[in-house]
Length: 213
Length: 266
Image (cartoon, rainbow over all chains, first blue to last red; front, side, top):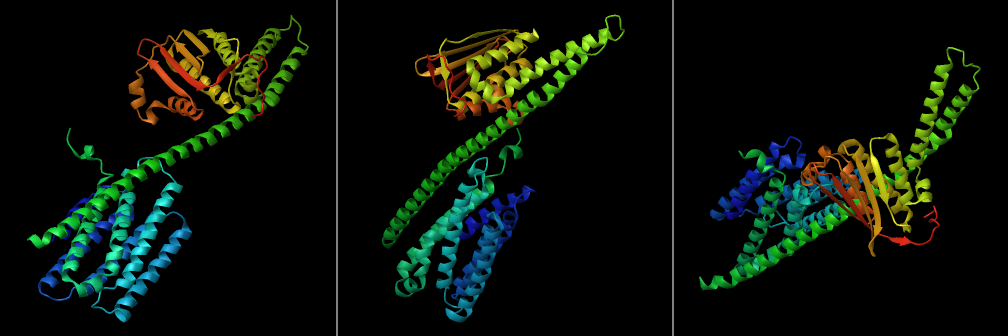
């Protein structure tokens, strides 16, 4: 439930993106993405409470997440060639992941293989963003750059959860207690990720403008 | 309840490690990015200044070779015009000759101020003295300059940049200060070359001006500061409304006892 609260706070912060008419498309799509996350998380919670499997829902949710994050990288990268490569990788990855979910690992098992590939792609994408940032420095502070906070969050989250998700199916079958601990660690990572997303949405807001003197 | 303690510890440790790593990562990124931004700005500024020097050189050459020559020809033509003293056009021809002589002198001065090779040949002290003489000639300012007998030795690039800074300072005095006296002093304190420009103009609030956005305060002040920083110098301004302005530039350089000047080539 705490996850949903963090995502809801992040969703509320993301609505500030609409205050800026010049905000890039990825920032304007973020509230929709977060709303989908909230709905899916809540549905997943309800399904679990009824002792049904919510794995298929999370499989689909993670596919949507990766698709959105690759779109984010597509938006922040410079250069037509790099954008083209990201677009091709995204299509190939999404097609491969759906194939894996439906024909290899199955709908009722978490898609660990394609999830790990997805994590590696996000990590590589984040590293490329930072390299690009140093190659083409812009005037102003990076702390007021939403893409910096989003990429930092993605890099940390996926770098930390990659080894956990890789062995999730195996651990879940051997020890419920370790499974519980890992779930807590994963939740902690989610809190950090969405806190950084919240910072990304608020870093450009001029609070003085909206408070009376 | 007791069974949950190890899990909480694990969570706390992992959370702290991740948070620490994240903070370190962000701080490192900010520091590295600022350094990169600074070196990038310096590179841009350097390129801008090099282009500017090229443009100045071309303009100076064009003034000297083309406009100056044409005006001299016009002056000669006027001098050889068959107009006697009794001719009604005589007065006009003489006035035109005087005006053309004035224009030739002015554009010759302008050409000299712009040409970087000439600045290097003269040396910073004499080049600045030339600028002050130009101002004194207008009659609006009394100027004075103190500099040691020894020659200030700076690299070619630094010498040109310093001269452009001095030109900008004098330009600001002419445009904004309303001063009557301009004093320039150059000296060497054993480690640094110190250049001071003082005027008795209306002065200004330094803090306020520096706090203004670059658009409001114009590019003059920031350009002088950036140029000084680029050549490894320190730029300070002391001013108060009603009390004139004193600008000091400290540069790592030395005084040379030699009377010959450094080579024009770097």
